[in-house]
Length: 190
Length: 187
Length: 141
Image (cartoon, rainbow over all chains, first blue to last red; front, side, top):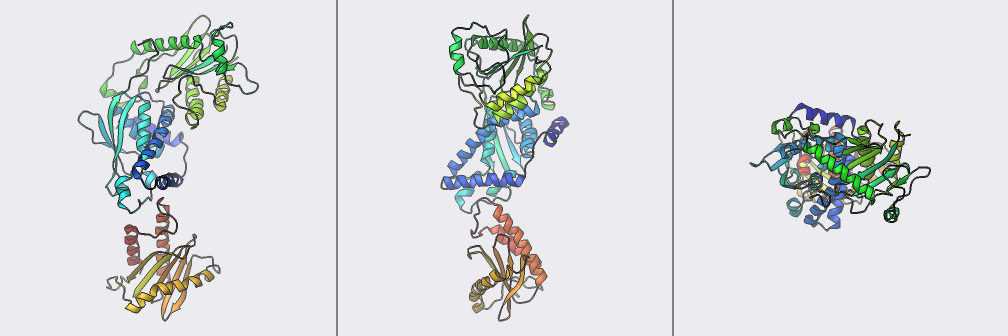
């Protein structure tokens, strides 16, 4: 990818982003997930749904912060969106740069592969099979991506495909563009 | 050189914030009749010592007219003057957002309206007297510093405003005032 | 030489235990306790807990060295800042190696604590923890 994107992202990360201790962040997220599991009595489907909702509410606000910090406008193509999300978005907020891979033939689906996941450091899922089959630990990321992209008029279906915590070799999120939403016009103009 | 007022419209075409610094603003007719009843009900209280009004004209006809003017001019600017989309260059240089032609300001005999649209469809508009040159940086600061920090990051306030809801929280009002009254253009 | 490691929680409940033999000098790592000793091992360590509670306040180090002796078998102990006790039953004196062993076990234990699904005083059932402890045993003992 071009040097300018990487340089911009590094510059913003170094200068304009307030930093906190990553262990504090990881432990806070961990206790949120553990508490949700306790509250829903280990109904992992519900826990996933809650995490996604929380992520959605975060995402709709995060996108404004992101656009204000970077000064970017709307992306012109889905490919551009993918690059901006992975190289600038993830870099600014989590200091990781996932790989954009597995583009589908029509250019409407792609995967983000995370080599390291700061949300899940030192986490071991409970030993029962249910957890490792049903729980997506970092599901909040799914909600964040959905919410943020919806605010820029892109309706995207986001889901985890693989997770290192479940024993897979990498953490992978799949994004599918469903449609581009229309901007609203004042009554009487249309 | 003065600044008369500051208006914000959201992407649902509603007026979500109004701040007027002087009663003699050319847009607000001093004899507003039927609209004054509904406007006082949503007026927000000001911090002590500040002048003017906050959120008193959100449902006014002048708000709707101002929005209409801004919307139409913005559309014209987008359609006339935007470069055609070029797949190759966009992928290598997506930071060239200014490819799209956008409205900056328009002036009449009595005032100049400075305009900025965010990528999410939020409109920021400042009315000043015609001699004030360019407030684009001020608008951007209002967005990035005041709006993002006090409204977006505040989990208790909406991001997507339902109809007729306005921005009322004090820190936002104070932030806007601090930024604007510190400008040299503000009399 | 054979070793018996136990980790006891704050409520005197066992969290983890492992029986193994030395990996040095061609031994294969299985413990060579005779059957009567095997049954007595947990009791011996449990009895040592009282001694730990007395000794831990006399020193400000975490490693308490050899605190008890049972018919020639030595018991060494290590107390974590969270009052979790690591006990090792062994036959030969080997202070330095055991100290390193305990320190590394402490590092592993802290990593287990960091997982949000692990509550204090839970038994440690993760197989990866098991494997790592055995690797450490191979390294030091």
